[in-house]
Structures are given as structure tokens and as C-alpha cells.
Length: 84
Length: 183
Image 1 (cartoon, rainbow over the protein chains, first blue to last red):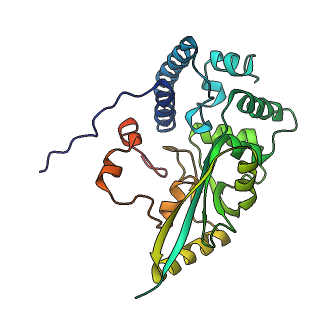
Image 2: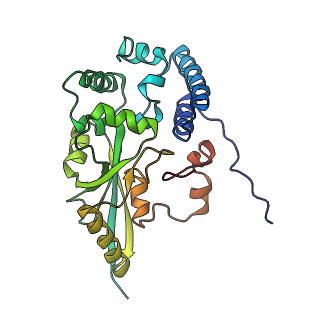
Image 3: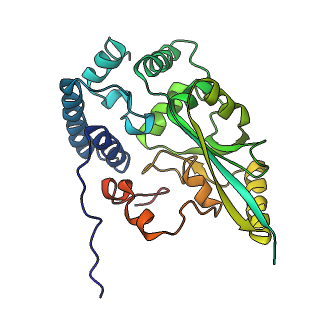
């Protein structure tokens, strides 16, 4: 059997990481997995905000549903908390 | 030898600058209690892909059919991984609006011999009548989105150069991708 290798990992930016996490989130309906992904998403948002160079809002497909987004996202982009 | 026919793929990347993105996001929030943003503005935010078989005079695009669903609910559903029935519309005006908005509307050509072109045209016409595909965000439950819908119609998007294929960043970043609901 032919040995197959995944594409070599490449360094990717935190913006790209948000997209990858959003894809992982949509791939599961298990709450526990979604919580883990949302936690990592929140850390990534935190790093982007701390970096001070976050000029573009993630594409809708790179976002989690509002209920799963970290509050810091809304404070940073909208200047206010999320509305229920 | 059959003649070559041209299919144009047209796309623009959405405007996600702070001010525009924040306005649309706020208007989607407001819609939970009343009026929301126009659907066009959501496309200008998200970006879009379409296809033309008449030299760019008419551009068709694939969208979720949001009949009876408030836009905010549709967007939240898509982000959640839900699928929605797909619908194909004449979206020439959307691409014009993107240009007017200041977005770079890009296109490239796919040339095919006439019989293959007619097959594609037939599939496109069928989709315009009633799409057989559901719409979803990548890795969600939908069959495809506006870009991957073109692949469903059998339109090749890659040139075939191995260097082009093997250097696609997305394959490294998202090494697995799902199209449609399955377990």
C-alpha cells in the first residue's frame, strides 16, 4: 500500500486559525467538542486583539454563531456586548 | 474540430473593514427586533462567486433560499453548520454593486469545446429552474456554497498544474473537508 502523507503543516496566521476553528466547529454537533473549539477560538481572538493589528472582521464563514463567540469579539468590533 | 466556448467565473472578496462589517453586524442584531440589513449588504460583507456564459452580461450565483427566514437567523444557522435549500439567481446587479462599493471584482475564463460547454449550459439552466443542491458554509451540512457549487456543475476551477494544486494553502490549513450531511 502506498504511504500517504498529509500536506506538510505550514505556519498560519491567527486570522486563518479562526477559519479553521469555525470549520471544526461546524463539523461536530457535540457540545463538549464545541466548547473546546470555542475556548480555543476565544484565545485566538484574545491574541489578535492583543496584537493590535486586527483590521479585518473575520468572514461570516470564519465566525462561530453569536452565542458561541467570545464577548471580547463584540466589544472589539462593535464597541458593545452582544445582544441576545 | 469543435469551437471553443468561454465560461467566466466572477468573484469578489467581501468588505470586512471595521466600519462596514460592524454596521452590518449591528443591523443583523437589530433585525432580531425589527428591520435588518438588505441582503445585498450581507453579500458585500461575505463576498460572492458567480458564473457567466455570455461574456459577463449576465452573472448567475448560488445562494441559500432565505424565503421566510430573517437574515440574522439564516446567518446564524449557516455559522452553526445548518444547510438551506439552494437557489440560483441572476446576480449581475450584485457584482455591479460590489464594483460600485469599491471592491475588486475579479474574473477568469474557462474555455471548453462546444459539446462540453452545452453540457455545462444545460446543467446551469436546470439549476436556474430548481437547484438540486443545498447551501451551507464549508464543513457544514450543506452540499456546497457559491464557489463549490461551480464544481458541482462540473466546472473545472484548477488549471491542472501540480504546482498550483500542491501549493494551495487551504489544503494544509483545512486538511479535511466535508460536503453534505453524513456521519
